[in-house]
Length: 378
Image (cartoon, rainbow, N blue to C red; front, side):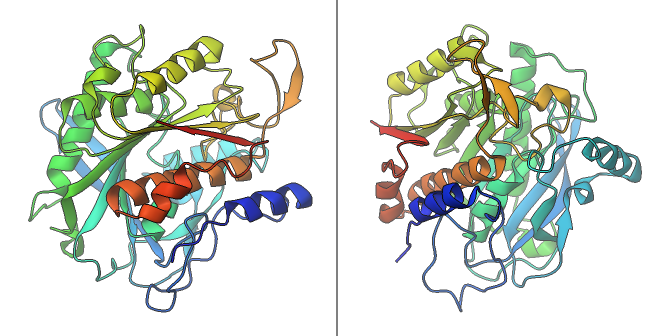
């Protein structure tokens, strides 16, 4: 039986001031030793990650893609700078971290570099994650690690020319189509039986019938376009941006039949009150099953592991000004707690949609901490 213990976690965090609550959880146990586990903590698999290179031939783009996957054994974990593609990027990350408050950007991972993948199951469900505007493939590695620890592989690209270290793309419909083509190209490659981009141990290991997408901000819009245009994707996690809006014509909620989970930061100073109103309207207009999770005192970057790493990503960490009460100062929700809530509800959603877990589906509709998390479903 998969237990759901977030309520206890939230209460403990609030009582302890969240100082002792962990992002990662214990990943030292194996699936054979752990028969009962909770989606609000790391699961039975240790987590591995590795960077692969995928060609988006239709756009002439080479993409760095991070894979998080269930590993056969636990090994030494890494720091965020270990995701760097080269030494120059590593130095730049370290320089940025010197001025970032400790609770904003998550510095230590719960995954190890390139261990052998778990032997079972034979085929893994797959989620492709699309990052926010000028972010990175590891912007939401807390979510990726949680999914991988419960048996779901996550593939996250650096959308070339739209990352923290490789900018220049426009926030427009044309580049949205390019980002969506990145996602489809990655899925094409991962589903290729003898893909040369993958190590032999991961070739042919992905379940073509259990594929979903998640995205944050610009990545949420990317997820909406993919769900509308690519029938291989079975569900979508939409974080902190509407998929349909006047800003990006051509994406319509009415054209998306798949289950959707919308996550809303109630104090989102990036998309603002208008953006949140459109996001809530997207939920109401959803054709298929839909859930909406609203987090009190959360900002746009509260969902992200790289909150505050540059000034543009500050809205969601530390002190801020409410967008619900303009001019009123307040303190954003603790980032460790916000990331854990995001990972927990994301895990419940994909457990229900990709693993067929009915208990997770039932728990997904429960608002267990009404002062922090509001849950609606339709």
